[in-house]
Length: 321
Image (cartoon, rainbow, N blue to C red; front, side, top):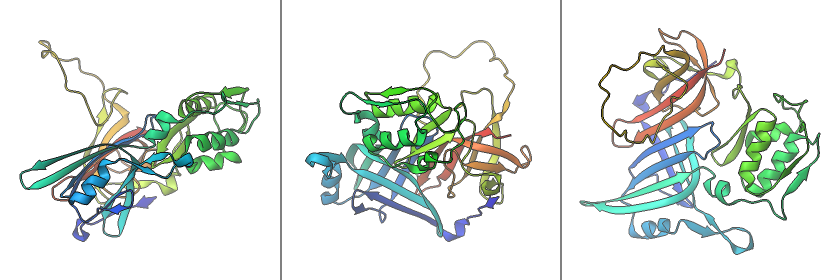
C-alpha cells in the first residue's frame, strides 16, 4: 500500500497554465469535478489580476494549430498539492471566460471541460467505419481515438493483454459499424464488451466494469495520519453525487422524512489535496468506522484557494470487496 503523508508545514504549491502562459504566480481559486462517468469532467478556475495583455489573450479561447489551418481549443491545466508532492488535477479545453473588476482587483473566471471539444465535434469520416466480428478491441479503440483527437491513455494496453468482462478475450463479440459522433460510438463499443470509458486529463481511460486502477499493493492509504479529514460518511442510497448541485425548489415537507438504512458500500470521504486521488484509483480507508477497507474512487471534487482554507479533495468511494 502507498501511504502518503504530506505536511502542511511545507506549504501549498500550485501551477496554472493556459496555452503557453504560465500563470502560477497569481492567486487562484478552483473547483474541479472528475468522475468515471462518460460525460466530460468539468472545472472552474478563478485567477486574480492578470495583466491586460494576458486577459486579451485568454479571451480568444481558440488558437491556430489544427489540421487544414483549423483553430483548436486553448488547453488549460492546473497542478496542485504540497511542496514535493503535486499532481495534475485537471487538464481540459477552455470553454468560457468571464472577466470583471472587483474593487481594485481583476477577476478572470475560466470554465473548462476535459476533452469537451473532441466529445462535441468529432465525427467519423466517409459515412463511418466497419469492424468485423473478432476484431481486437484495442485496434478499435486506437482508430477511434485517432478520429477523436485525444491520447490513448491506458487504453493502449487493451491492444494485446486486456481482460475484458463479457467478451471472448479481447475481441469484438460481433461486427460493428461506427458512424456519427466518435465519442458516443466509442462508448457503445466499450459497453458492448463490459468496459467503462471516460476521458481523464485529455486521454482515454478504460477500466473493466467493477475494476480499479492498480492493485491493493498500490492503493493509497487514507487515515487521519495520511490526510483523511473528519469521518467518512455512508450514503443513504446509490445516487450520491458531487458538485454543481441545483437549487432545490418547492416548500419544505410537513412530515418527517423516511429514515433510510445507510449503504456502507458507498462512502463520501474528504482528504487533503494529496497526489493520486483520481477516478478509478483504489484507496484503503483506515478509520474507526472503516478499518482497513478497500474502496475505489468513483467521483472526486477538488477545492482550493491559494489565499484561504480550502485545499481538499471530496470523494465518492465504492467498496472494492
